[in-house]
Length: 236
Image (tube, rainbow, N blue to C red):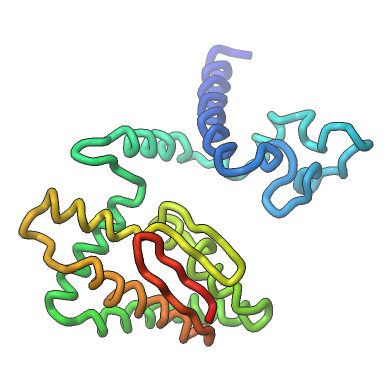
């Protein structure tokens, strides 16, 4: 192995190590070294079935190969993503920052203007209209697989939600998650005085609830929404 190849291998190994630390926190170890998402325990995606009872699951014998075949670990921008996440969570002045700061604050700035002009109804209608192609596609899945697919499409199944919400707890017929706007609005009012005047209830009643209800209507499902520090959305 040349010096150049050795440096590349070391850099790749360090990147994988950091990524695997994150991956292991979110998934059982078997998802990294054994079955991939959706695969049965002890069977790697596309690999042979497990050996005799008591033996190691398939894929455990060659974790390096599993890492090389993992699309997440092969992303070219993974190093920058890990660095950005570390820098974000390492920043705690004047308050602990989070990955969704920019999107939550940007939405709040937009809503502050919209609400102050009394245009929230038009804004929600426009938003739902722009989402119709996606919502119609989810509607077809709902017709085939049931209304649970609507909740999946609105929340854990779309980057628009899991990039905004710190976590999404999935239950049959129900999703709940910490409100991404309440704490952000409180911090904005504290550190940016005279810039935000709307209330947290405005965000709930003039943005979140009508938007989600608009989505549900397009997909022809009924939902019940309970806003709060933890928002709850259920099939009705």
